[in-house]
Image 1 (spheres, rainbow, N blue to C red):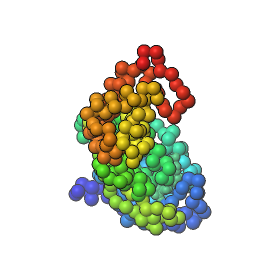
Image 2 (cartoon, rainbow, N blue to C red; image 1 turned 135 degrees about the horizontal axis):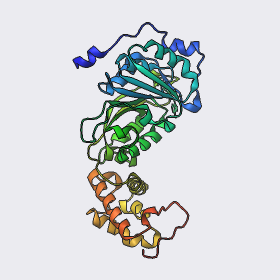
Image 3 (spheres, helix red, strand yellow; image 1 turned 135 degrees about the vertical axis):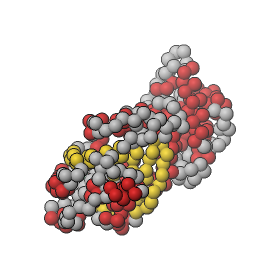
Image 4 (cartoon, rainbow, N blue to C red; image 1 turned 180 degrees about the vertical axis):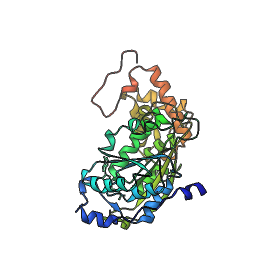
Amino acid sequence: MAASKAAKIRLPPLPTIRDLIKLYQIRALRQLSQNFLLDERLTDKIVKAAGNIHNHYVCEVGPGPGGITRSIIKRCPKKLIVVEKDPRFLPTLELLQETCVNFVKMDIEIIDIRNYNFVDGFKGAPQHNWFEAPPPIHLIGNLPFSVSTNLIIRWLKAVSEKSSAWSFGRSSMTLTFQKEVAERMVAPLGHEQRCRLSLMCQFWCDVDYKFTIPGKAFLPKPDVDVGVVTLYPLKKPMVDLPFKMVEKVMRNIFNMRQKYSIRGAERLFPEKLREELGPQLFRLADLDYTIRPFQISNEEFGRLCYAYKVICENHPGLEDYDSRAPKQALSSSS
Ligand code: SAM
């Protein structure tokens, strides 16, 4: 606590974010879902939610005019990389870069975060064994909702593969989501919001819903409130199977949320095998197939994934079967 307090620095007087937006005539672009946070207490709170970042490596995703960026800089990271898609923010970000040049190394990348290479960006950062304490690396961002939901799935995949930012160890992520999505991410067993996303997040990460930001805090105001969530990758995932396989089991089972779980699960198999393999899946997982998807615990879902893997091993080609794709033939041995 004392260390992070001591680590805080005071920035020299700067124009407010509101003034900068006016000065550079930056109009929020609907197609990039730009909603800016102007209240410094809130941007400080988001950064505080990421934990101690003093002397650490931070990547801020979608800095926009730089509200959260200022709060990050005040906490004196060793290196800050900001990745922004919209080049109109370059001057405001360069202003911050010049301001902090003597105490924080700040890199500006004007690029879509989906094309950004974290391994290059964090070059030189300490690499921690997965089972050690997390590395001093944090991803922080207030992104458009459509991007953050898509990104979290990509990043969970990278966590599962220990690749990208997670090749350095269990790097944490503090991100904003539409409140309902954030609630889904943490939804426990039996919760009405429990869905595929809840399981995917909780299989690989400890998910912490930090706080809610009312929509009215943003400029322009979005239609919804926002949830701030921190994800800490688990030392041991709930299932140690390929991401794609787990995602497929979840997707099919949750496809029919209110029905018996076997209804969705059957769609993992071609029609002619459903009657046989559907019940077999639940037998192998030691689970009653009349259970509804949102009533299945993380551990039981894990067992279903392992059961699916066993069935796939006995039916070559099954793993590639997709009920949504045009008719596919399994190899003759199945
Ligand atoms: N962080 C700023 C704040 O809190 O005021 C801006 C938040 S605004 C909701 C989202 C920002 O992400 C915008 O600056 C937008 O241009 C940027 N952005 C949107 N899609 C992006 C992408 N794919 N890669 C990088 N930045 C993106």
